[in-house]
Amino acid sequence: MKTALITGAARGIGLATAKILKAEGWKVVLLDRDSEELSRASETIEDCLPIVADVSQPEEVDRALATLTEQCGRLDGLVNNAGVADFGPIRETNFARWRRVMETNLDGPFLMTQAFTELLAADGGGAVVNITSISGLRASTLRVAYGTSKAALAQLTLQQAVELGELGVRVNAVAPGPVATKLAMAVHTQDIIDAYHDALPLNRYGKEEEIAAAIVFLLSEKASFVTGQILAADGGFEATGIGLPSLRG
Image 1 (cartoon, rainbow, N blue to C red):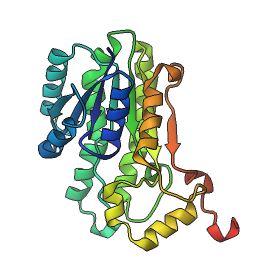
Image 2 (cartoon, rainbow, N blue to C red; image 1 turned 120 degrees about the vertical axis):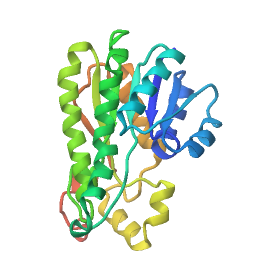
Image 3 (cartoon, rainbow, N blue to C red; image 1 turned 90 degrees about the horizontal axis):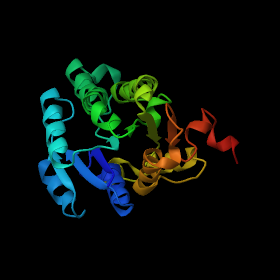
């Protein structure tokens, strides 16, 4: 049975991905630093392995590797989904705030992929999917740390794909656009929601399950010759560039 490890799996896109993989016959390992949410999430997926760990801490990553190796003995897919969404003006982003974003969004995928490379390569080559963001492909206000971390993660994806491809390990990324997560809907005002709808060719937010489906595709054998790609699952947001919605009517 194929095994996948999903970080940031206690909620949102991570949990949605785990549920699809489980339905397709994978064994899923859920990793998150929020132990309470992780416990609740693991109750919704039969026979999953929950691991409480912070992906930004090397010693916790090593402990997660030891646990997965002992409990599962193999790894076919790694989804680096854990992330910190901290938005604010440049002048209000101090170095501690900057590092808090970078250590999870960039250090985490580096540490996790490096630690699990040998396990991924052991059975002829597994797959890694990094979760970047549309904010890493096009700049926006209030995202100096977040957007930069995601742009760097896109480049890390390419670096990993080039080097790990020699081991048979594929590495790709999914860059979600606006997604109707509980958190987003709680903090987005109606003005923001309307503005996103106007800016998106599909005129709506994405669903967690839609992003998860793209991730599962990249993990699957259907994408066996796909590596080093950044797939924007964004409703066409990136394609619109800076075009004004009023000119599209």
